[in-house]
Length: 119
Image: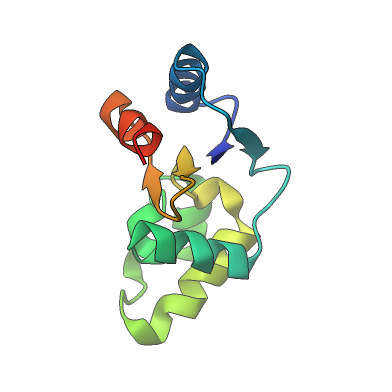
């Protein structure tokens, strides 16, 4: 199990505390420092069953600078979104847990973390 976190994020810290409390075996990835590649982002999206715009933090300043809210949300634009996430990792929703069964969850709630733990 791996969790992508930003240590400054309270939801990330809460998720890590819960994983620790449950004695989970996991690896921390500080994704702002160890930036995921486009292929890694695609892989996580596949595991999540989501599209890049579903995990994009559109309220971030970089999103405004890029004009993301105006970008099409369709198959033809998917690579453009993935590239933006790889180039601006702060735009990636967090925390993301990749579970041992090959699935993943955006673990912003205790329920989502527990869901990942149950897999």
